[in-house]
Length: 278
Image 1 (cartoon, one colour):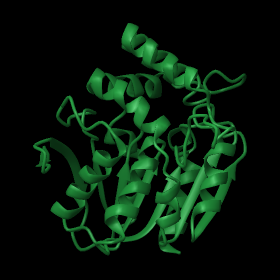
Image 2 (tube, helix red, strand yellow; image 1 turned 30 degrees about the vertical axis):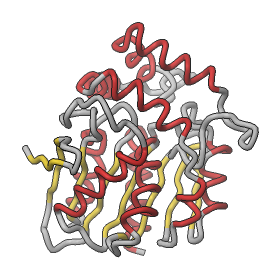
Image 3 (cartoon, one colour; image 1 turned 90 degrees about the vertical axis):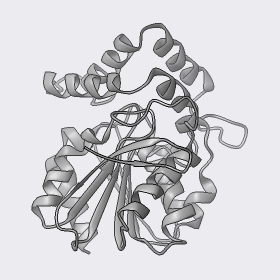
Image 4 (cartoon, one colour; image 1 turned 60 degrees about the vertical axis):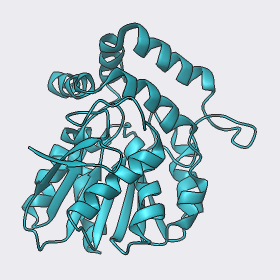
């Protein structure tokens, strides 16, 4: 098992598969999961000859369950520590949900200034800002996120089961093909991480304004989202992202859920590959 230790002493677990001289594809997972959530994509791109890298966010998965640093700045700095440790160059960074926020801040603050990033992909991502404010009237009311915190603190195991069996993959929709294995894997990943990291992470993904991050990104960026995303409303996310990006391309998938990377990998993976090679 591979780990690096960050400047503030946090052990971060990572995977690094494939030829070291191949172009790296770096994956950033969503809340409250781990880099295992990218298994399908990592195997796909590995089979296409790429080097694939992913890490567990601090407090998540196999990384250290520390009490501090559960915010987008530390998330991005940790991602940068992995990229620097592995000396990744000409990399494509792909982020899902909270991982999309991590990618946006990493690319803007570290990746571009260091000349390490070729392209970026935001999938069902949280930027620019999820929570409703005076400046973001179309956002999600803070009461919703307070409800997440309350449910997590009261019974994290049941809360995670409810998310996975319901809105995350759209398994609550009429006619949905429900996968018990997918549900169990989501729950497994969530319960590997620390309750404190997950609790604090709700604020990080919902209340971090990343408008400036998106505006600073100059590399080609692909924005993907389903229009039946029940976790991150696409009108307040991907539609705004592509307006703020300097070099963005948008693709909306009709009827796809938040977890479309898993439920519709047969559609999403070829689209990712086309963008990477394009």
